[in-house]
Length: 298
Image (cartoon, rainbow, N blue to C red; front, side):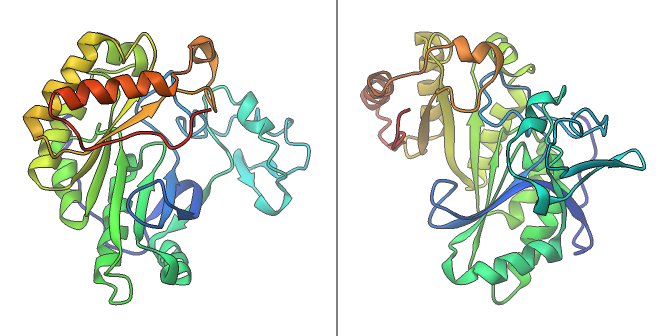
């Protein structure tokens, strides 16, 4: 990516395409958080648990006949979603040819601020996720800046859950208003990373180093996929990478399961607790003890 540094639009009139908002989450950063799931991703991970957040609706209309309640209509060549009619059958997600949800909404910064104010008493912070939230980096920057400048919200922490594929200039613009980044490393081998995501990994690895140097790397997240990311070479790269960052680096090991995945990933074995525990022991022998593992295995 060779784009110029993004200009953070601090206007509350900027808008973002949001797939879903959760107003109470204890798994998307520290404490209780309001989480915004942005639509659209710049990777096409075969093991994605939210594949309907990858694409951006092109208004082809294929989903309209599948929507029995009539929540989706095609008006002036644009898909219009009426959430009050939706029965959440997700038939539209099944038929979409580009893994895009048409059940999205446009939010302004002011819209999100109003929602945060409503739930403020219960919140520790805000997390933006996806999809990939940094594809809408201007909005994220504007939102975080608005939170920091609001006396009633400024105590909330602002976190980004990211695949790290934003360029250096983009991170340099976002980090001053960001308190923490939870960064997914999909694989260390470029060949394996391309197989799993459709792209190479050097941007994400460079981003993790940059974010760590800025003191904003909350944790590295690593998905253990049997026969892929749990092989000895990959795990040694994980050890080397964490050791280079520092042994205090938090590592969250996620276990591949079948929930939400599509296609060939359904034929991949899920990883049991014993497999994750073996990786924890390997990391421990290398001096890496700040490790979090799944609370539930399906």
